Every structure is written in structure tokens, then in C-alpha cells.
Length: 242
Image (tube, rainbow, N blue to C red):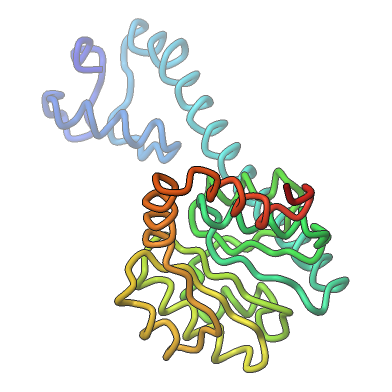
């Protein structure tokens, strides 16, 4: 419009400028069209037919398509959660689906826990989709929020595994979970040993220091090379101890 500003007519009969060009493009693409600026020449009308109208249609397709995708994804997730809630009364709730959370789920599946009894609470969309792709029930949201944990049936779980990336989130998650599930077994992983008392005071039955545990294994493996193999055998239920 700016290049062909002489082909447009303003209702106030004032010259078309840069701001007018942006304004016209905005109201046209948004299908508002106040009519205060209109194409007056054949060239301007052809530009509107061949350029602006396809751009407007493309904009609407993207807008409607994105909206439908979000609504479909939410409806599918809500249906999956409702179906899961109706069948499972004592789930294992895994808060966090990062490296620790995925390993915890793998251990549960290896130990014979059915997928239908595992629910993952994860805030990140990519990680939540990864858990859903494995056939797990997923509640997307922060595990520190009571409403999210309530949706995950944390009020009557068999156990709660807190595998968040940050220690402060682990403390809040344990506190929130314990408030809703008085009898559940809650185990939490923290990075720093100084946070263990805080996690236990929040209601965790067991606290695991991931960084120190890995560091001890690294140090002891230099003295006893077979130690790591023995520990892995003990932790792997699907394999015979050797």
C-alpha cells in the first residue's frame, strides 16, 4: 500500500503515509475493514485481490488451525485423564519427567507396575508429550500446585515419587502432596544434602541425594572396580544378580 499510496483514498482526503499503510494492513488482515481507507485505482484493487486476500485467508487458517489443535489436544488429554481416574484407585504419581523421573518410571515398569497405574505430573510440554507417547497418564502442570496434584489423584496414591529438577520445587511438591495424601509413601530426590532435612520436614518418608550418591559411586569405583556393576545388578530387577 505504501508503494502504491496514490491508488488509495482516505475518507478525510488526506495523503496516505507510513502509519496509514500499517493501519490499513492491520485492519485488513484482521478482517475488520473500517472502510476509512479504500483502494481507488485498478492497481490497488488488484493488489488487494491477489496479495491481501490470500494473506488474510492464510492468517485465518493458521489462527483457526492453531486454536483447533490446542482444543483437540486438551480434550484428548482430559478424556485420557478421566478414563484413567475411573479405572485406577491407587496410582504411583511421578512428579517430574526429566532424567530422574524417566529412570524412576523405567524401574517401576521393570518391577512389574502396569502403565495404567503410573501417572506423570510434568510442566514442560515436550517432556509431557514424551510420557504420553509411552502410554502413561500425564497431567501437565506444576507439581507444586494443589489443583494439579488433585487432578493426578494424589489424594489416594500408593506412593509419590518427587523427581523435580530443582530442590525448592521438590520441597514444595512434597509439602503439597503430603497435605493431600496423609498415608502415601513419598520419596524425593534432591541435589544437595543440606536440603534433606527440609524435605523430610515437609513430609517425605525417604530422601535421596542424587549428586552425592553418584559421586560416592564414582569414588568407590576407582578402589573397587566391580562395585558399580554389583550396584547396577542389585538395582535391575529384570536381570539375575552376578
